Length: 377
Image (tube, rainbow, N blue to C red; front, side, top):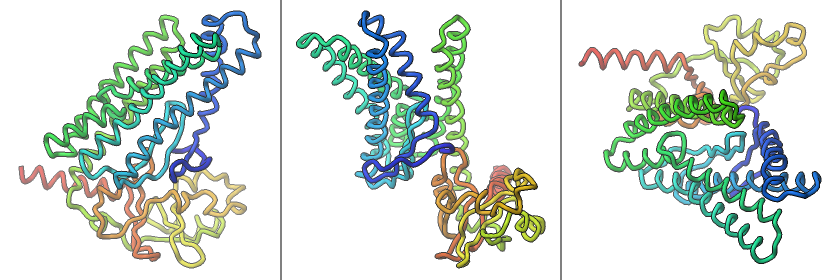
């Protein structure tokens, strides 16, 4: 996810944190320390409330991490490669390959909400017990709040709409029943779009009526609507590209350029002479090291074009999608980073660049196959 940085590993999987996470912790701590705890346990000092609320917010983020770790652990045990886990303002995201069977997809989907519900029940029970046996009202209040938040998280994620875990459950069940994976993905995407619109409208109405939390609900609804729409389009694309290999969409030969030259020199010697809008870069040894778009080059201020190297403004190798010519194109597109549908794809044979697949290439191929299908119909 753009704007995230790697902060470590969890279960052998890279762990990333979005810049919005510290803001979320501050918001949660502020709400807990200024509104919830003073009502539940009045009479404490501002310092005590601050320490307790920060602890509660951090524990909630740890709970979100446990939720995503459950997805990652279940996927890895089932043989599904996991790319990374990212925490951000609306929860978490576990990036992995598509499960190979409906059974595996179901297990991966339910694991996260199950952990949230277990953590929620344990925290709530611990809070009640601490208050009853030890009389520690403030720690008990924090644990009860944490338990309620986790139960709410688990229940909300079980709503039957993608990209929520409940949508993945419905998708797995439909896949198992019909044997048609793409049809199940389209159905889950449609339900996600409907849920997103409902949450967006409900949140906005709530906000207009004076409840600030409604804005947060509207934001969640907007996110659900957008991601569900993207997943539905991806399912349609996967169906259209059934049986298509990367080589069928690949542009070759393609103009390339060295990644160590200045932006200005690259524009003059490579970009200005190319018919492509996305250009692969090669390192000193001739290996593909990333890609750069004409749009990104154009945004570099003219005074900086001689001091910046082109690799400084490019998408690096680690964030690029690679494939071989004989791989199924639909599977390759699924490997991309969220929001970019895996494009562009650098097509390689070992460390030798054979060509590139861009969004334009995929759109052209999709339109041709759609026309052929319409002609046959």
